[in-house]
Length: 293
Image (tube, rainbow, N blue to C red):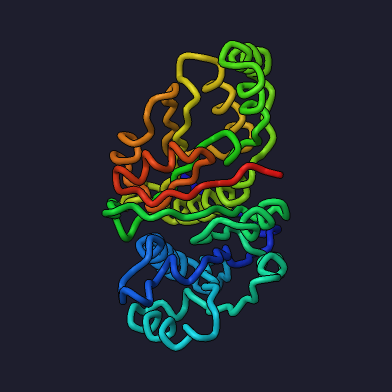
């Protein structure tokens, strides 16, 4: 079996994830934030990438957004957990966070509070979301990064969702049947999925016989159904993009909680608060993707 080869024409740049410092470390509680296990998994993937591609700059980099008053505390915690190579502190003024995200070629921005910063980042093409904390965080592995995405308004545009909101279920089903072979436009998180799958394929090419666990797993957890054209259109779109996830789950409107409880992702992105709440109830760190303005 021949190994897969990545294109040498594409520039290799870090996969930059910016986040509020409180998502990683809680100063007032001397504890961890909801993003801690996610960051630990990023560190594990980086170790695999460095092992196989020691000269490559295509690694995860975390920019921790903080104010100057917490810098000493954060640096101590970063060193304590051996995260110096992964994390950089980025002091950001409240009035211009989006400009710095753009200058750093940010692939993902995670905030611990709602507000204009997340909306502005989305409007400028940065995948951005508000992270929520479950009472008890449950993940499967620290050495295997698991990321789950909703479909509409997250990986895909919100075009079909708008049809559902304006015309109801039957109009939505009619629209999906008519357009089942038509690729949907990309949503705000398509780019982040692209870099995850690129890194996944890069690592898989070093293990063509699949002797070891895959370091990155991606999931689609969508309310689209398996028995109608909505699910078919989602899968057709992903295939056309060349972005087939490890497991697509088409729930047909069922509660997403049990599926997330089974796969135990480090992070889940959805545009509906009720699905975020269902994730939190089963111990999944969930992020709310705001609707575009």
